[in-house]
Image (cartoon, rainbow, N blue to C red; front, side, top):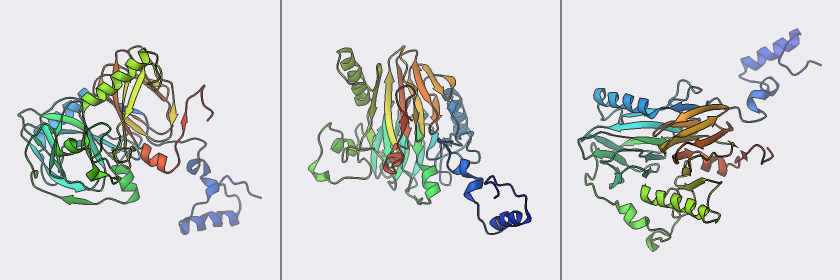
Length: 360
């Protein structure tokens, strides 16, 4: 019998393989390693983008490319070198730096894809979500769940940049995308300190009786830095007092949640924030699913698949599925993270491996 290695050394076998090709067929035995690897073998590769470089390019784009209908946003996707021909950070996640000049307005639109914004520096821009103006400030996580109309307006003469995260690659692969234009400007150009969504939902442990139904995405449009910072600070204070509060020694972390379910803020994207004490290092780990990180404050390094990369404020890096990673803090080190955890969890593929601690 012929071995199942894809070689053809008889006329009959050569004809069989020609018939496979002619009829758009591919036998498993010639591609088992590709279809069913022993461990995940992502095409996406670990990569680091330096914030200073990104901001310089975004700034020059602001001078040369106007915001308006057609392109809609001055957003520049971070393209993973392992996924050429796309603007994808990972097979499921899209990440971009968006730049809005002084007194500019990005017109409203909506789309099926879920989106958020995270602000590493700057202020003066309001994102208007379904007619509700939401202030964007340093350290804030702002949500735009799928099919919510949204636009941005800058009330100041100063430009502002932030990162966008969306599930565009996943939505594209599954062919679920819709898009619709909205207002040429924004439906409300006010600039309130607190959005209506926050006034209703941003009270810890309290939920309005008018909103007891479980919502697919969080109705809270802004997760403010002051609360994130306080939560992380208290975790480390409790650790100092000898109480269990951190995920590992010197490593505090929170997950942003949907107040109607206690689950993730959106059905396809998980958002977290991590704080590591100066001089501490996280355990090396492998995780199923991909993630994108941004340094919010401090300096340190990340070990990605055996290579160490220095990190400073604003730098972004991507961790593909099952690529081992760990973080080391030179100073107190704050990092924002988003990943495809809700998809992985719901499909039952969740797996984490910490060498020396877990069995694979």
